[in-house]
Length: 294
Image (cartoon, rainbow, N blue to C red; front, top):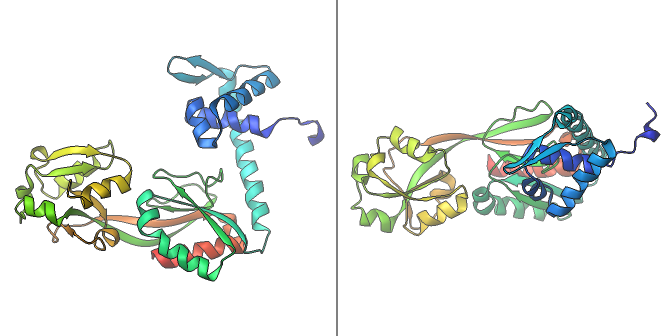
């Protein structure tokens, strides 16, 4: 192939790819950090360049046309290639100074990460860490982050991961709330107690029910997927909530409810693209995170 004849604008292809994956221009614009009109113009420019319609505009968002479906796989291959090129180029340098993006949940970013970053900065002051707060899974292959702290093992073949530890979450309440409830000594005594749900899946209710709590008789006036907000409700005595015991046990004025209850186990994985090993800067941040979180 004569590569000099290829004139595709990668920004337009990326705009199409992310819009297809996100399902709407507004969500894609947020993912890429662009204004929605700018993104829309990039998609329209690609459609004119290719001479095909890539999306059908409907009242519920965007749907891929047959041509869009046909081209999506090629766009993903281009995206993977662009990411691999950038990762490989970054891995060629032995310089320690520079930026590393670390993806982490909001509550770990607030409660666990700062002392680790403080020690890292004392040792490597030239490394600038961008903290990507994301309670979902950042896409390392698209360079949304360089390193991710996850609670699930990655399945992508071009990622490397280390299981740092098997952590435990427990149910906590403020001492003031436990006093108001009369300090129950068995799960049944928490009938009527307020709880915060951690998402729309009913996970918190299921965890409580599995430990014998009378879920149908308890109250759930709060729900959030923002873990820091949920933890603040617990700290203020407004609800019972579940959190990593390294965070919960360190919080003054908050106690485990029924300390003998079985904990909620979950793994802590450190994940990066396999080319991370070729960069001294990424390895330095990886090693600091591994030491601090293990």
